[in-house]
Amino acid sequence: MGQMMFTKYLVVVDDDVDVHNTSEVLFRLCANTAPQRDSLFTKDPSDVLDHATSEIAMGSKLGIDATKKLPGESFKRPWPPLLKMNAAVKAKVETLPGDAGDKS
Image (cartoon, rainbow, N blue to C red; front, side, top):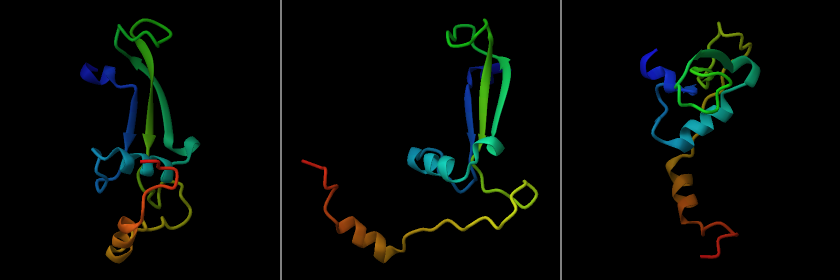
């Protein structure tokens, strides 16, 4: 397994997602998944130093499909488009004062 044995969690997103932007990945993770349909557990070799595994050098891994679903993937309706703020709305939001709970 090489270096993959060190991986415990794998989240797959579409190619238009900036994987270096945690907020964007988490948004897709929450918006594009149904836990039963999009989760896969497997048991594979793992790091011998991983104290969380139930047996030495064998551990579970979780894969999550956070991609848009295609017609052949048991999704029975059209996938909705991603809504984005237009430039005017974005500019207006950026002029608003900070969070009401913000004391700074």
